[in-house]
Image 1: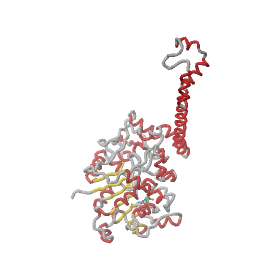
Image 2: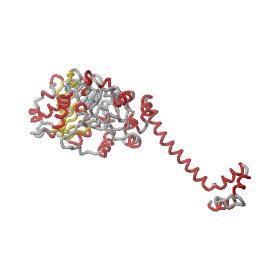
Image 3: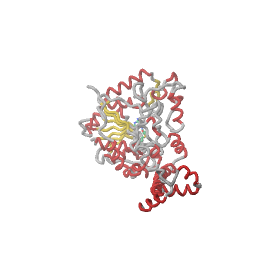
Image 4: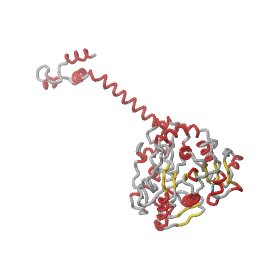
Length: 429
Ligand SMILES: C[S@@+](CC[C@H](N)C(=O)[O-])C[C@H]1O[C@@H](n2cnc3c(N)ncnc32)[C@H](O)[C@@H]1O
C-alpha cells in the first residue's frame, strides 16, 4: 500500500511543494477541471481509506447514541417529548433560574453516612425486591422512589422497632418488612389494611401490632412509654418512625420529640405552595436559604421561570398559585395545612420564620432522598427537577439506568416523588 502511494506521488505532474514541470501557476491554468480533479484524487489517494473509516465510525457511533434516545423517547408521551425538546436532553435541571432547592440547616452541619455509591448498590438490590411487591397498583400510596428510600434507610439504620403512621393497603408495611425481616412493626392507621383485602391486593404483616380500626389511636395520643416497655425498647434512639399520614409535620416533630424518638422519615415533604399539610420543605423555605424565600411580584424573573416550568411539570406552581392574600407565599398561600387539608390556618411570616428556627434547633441531620433517576430516563411528568436534588442516576446515563433494572419498571411508579425526608433530631436537655 505504501509502495503504491509513493509511486502515485512520483507520477504526479504537480508536486505539493511546487517543484513540477515548469511554472506551477501556468501548469494549473492549463489543466481542465476533470484533469485537475483526477490529479487531486491521485495526490490525496493515500488519505481516502482513513477518511472513509473515520466517516463510517462517526455515522455508526452517532446512530447508536441517538437510537438509544429514540428508544426512551418513543416509549413516552408526546408531553414528555416536548419537555425534552424544550429543556434539551442535558438541560432538564440546568434551568433552575431563581428557583433552586431549599433545605433545612442542621445544628452542626452533620450529614448522613451513606454515599451515592451506597445508594446505587441499594438500587441494584432493591429493584428485584420491588418487582415482587404484592400491591402492584398503589395509587394514593408510595411509588418506586419513596419505597426505595424507606427500604434503604430502614436497612441502613437497623432499628429495633419500626413504627409507621398511615398504612393504607399496607405497601409501606411490606417495604419495612423487606428491609428488616425480623424486626417488629407497629402500624397506626384508621382503617385496618385487612379491610382492603376484600377488594383486591393488600398486605397484612404477621409481626406487626396494628393500632387500627377500633384500636386506632393517633400517634400523638399513644402512651409511648407503655408501648416501649411492652416491646422492651430501652433506647428510643433505636426506633425508626415513618410518617405517611398527611399531618402537619411540625406537630408530628413535636410529638416525636416528646416521646424521645430520634429517627424520623416523612413521606410527603411537599414543596412550598403544594400539598395538604405543612412540611419541612415548606418550613425551611426561607430567604436566607438558597432557593428559598419568594417574591409575589408578577414582573420578576421568578414569576417568568415559574410560569414557563408550570407548562411542563404538573406539580410546578406559578406565582398566582404560590401567593395568597397579602402576598403570602409561605406554606400553601400563607396557610399551615393539617390533616389532609381538613384544617388550614393562616400564619404570619414571623410565625413561619419561628417554625424554621425551632426545626433548626433540634435538627442533627436533614436528608432529602434524591429522585432515583432523571426525568429523561423515568419519563416522570410531575415534580419539577428544578426543585429537586440531583437524581441518583443522572439524565443521560441510560446504560446505568438499564443495568440497575430500572428500565423494567412501568413509568407510573416514578410519578410519586415528593422529596421524602429523613430527619435525625435531638432536643437539648
Ligand atoms: C397516603 S396513605 C398511606 C400510604 C401508605 N403508606 C403506602 O405507602 O401505601 C395515608 C393513610 O393515612 C391514614 N390516616 C389518616 N389519618 C391518620 C392519622 N391521624 N394517623 C395515621 N394514619 C392516618 C389514611 O387512612 C391512609 O391510609
